[in-house]
Image 1: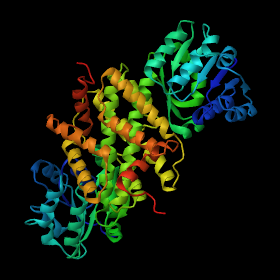
Image 2: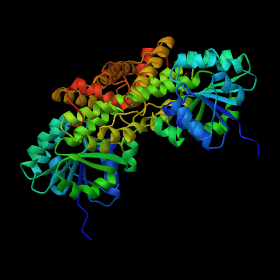
Image 3: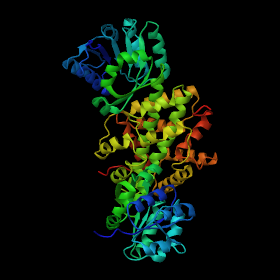
Image 4: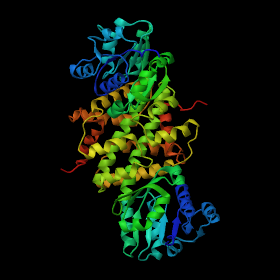
Length: 299
Length: 299
């Protein structure tokens, strides 16, 4: 049997840490790098090797993965000082699980591609739970050849691995994903406040509708947390707002009117202004509560 | 074993016909009444008995069911000439599967209740497919005692039967349901046009995202029809628009701002203006196509 490919992981946030852990548990040699030390030390204690720069990660591995908050973070780690680009070489596979602008993904693919690096923009969906359980949906833009090499690793990170198209196509799919996710979060917020204020029990309303045409992951997973008074992430509101910014930027770039996503962008921006940026994206109900001058749970 | 309760069914539309047929197949004696004769004759040929007015249906059965387009239709069939009210008596169970205003449901419950009729507002969700397969979600407002009597019938019509609360609570749940359904339909429309115009294959984008946090019945069921160029109902756009009208009326009545549902109401109203009222609710993509000056499928 062939030795397992070695993997480097840069960015150990809520999602990245769980995904890196699953790679480690599956027996892949793992080198990690992270800005804050806590998650890094956790993984080192579990058997990962520490590296002190993105370049130092990339030079030691077959596949280097990033999982970072936003487009500038990925640009810095890849193209900045001691960046992945310093260890760029033919045959290296670069996978970016971050959610960034499709245009940035294409730029990075072109820049690293000039050195023979094969790049996959491979954002994910499925939340912290999906990251922990390895059941994420992974949507990929980039060359088939790189997916073939990376597949054993991708398969421990996620359950649904879909090759969407060329460079940037993974990010377009992710933006499309966020159009739907934001719509569901806001609709859930509106319908819970609607039920509450119209005099029905929101718990029973959720139970009544989650088996019909309204069925969705959002209604399956989020209401139990909300009914416990828990609005902790999960997926942070400011990340949802950032992703909606990508949707709106990309929509403008290509000339795509998205009236509903535009409203959701405004409501998540309001959430940030209301001091709720670190809450879960389901916490957008806080904005509707403000507008309706009510609260979901009586105290 | 006790004899099966006898059932009357008034309103044999897309949903009603399939639901009535499931009741008949399950062996309940069935009396039917319908404005247009075609569906009625179909069910009569399968063993149902015809009645010539709502009153004539109600006088012959233990449970009388209505499944009609809108609030005025239900008022007419229940309270109008030769209406159910003419056969109102203690112990009769009245079930309304229509989606109507919660306020109208409460008014009917009070009016028939004065004669000893037990009323359930019991709108459904799950589309034509759910109606055919008997997998609908049924959301109920009204007395527990009536649900107990009706349960054997409800269980052949649907899979999830939820008692939400008192009179009108079923309709509040259905309005909540429509807030989510409309959001998903519009989000699906926006993300498909977004993917198309940004240069990704919409089919692959759907495949990529339907296993993640965006997962929903809408993304499972509707895209295959859209990709075949099929925008036939299913659930007609003008019914979706009518249901959103109920959402907006009820939201205003109770003082509930619903900014996202308001936009979706506008988009479905636009769909009607664009001559698409008889298309499936997923056909709201036609409005986004118009706005974006593109089409999902090249011809």
